[in-house]
Length: 200
Image 1 (cartoon, rainbow, N blue to C red):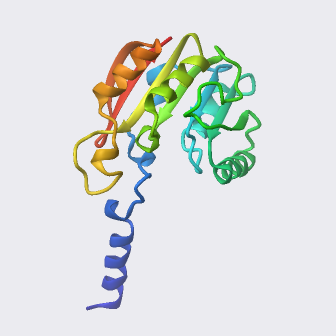
Image 2 (cartoon, rainbow, N blue to C red):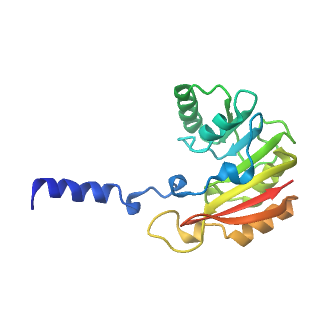
Image 3 (cartoon, helix red, strand yellow):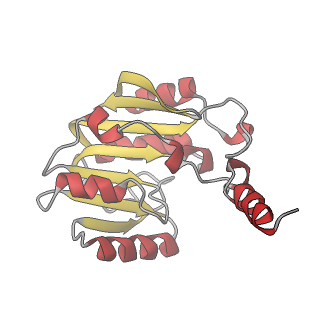
């Protein structure tokens, strides 16, 4: 086998979806989610379960600008340190990291009824108490504020979390409504993800 052909094969294997870590998937979301929810300048956003790449916090911070704030929330302090580093590299002073256990209502140090947009993206499959996460999201959302939920579809795929760990779209809708949110819309967020929009 030709040396360069071997390298090409190795690169293909390394970069194939099967080699993706179980909690990856943000890069598979193909919809302009911020256009979908009407994110604008000077709004306040909560990215609950931000993840160490701040994949959605960074573009959200650029949209809301200096008059807005993006709260990047996670339970892992190493993740928050990574987000702070990325925000500094991007020159974004409007990203504020917040340590919280989202499975405890009232644990998140963000003013109640303050968020124009609350995001739960690729995090519910990692939660053991989804109903509490939705209750905390409701507490933080302002009246008229939106909740955006994006997570893995329950269909089998060659990568991503185990199907048994994924929340079903219908269950997410039920939990959000039980928390007080009103259902607005569902959409296909990508080939392996569903999207849901609610309002408080």
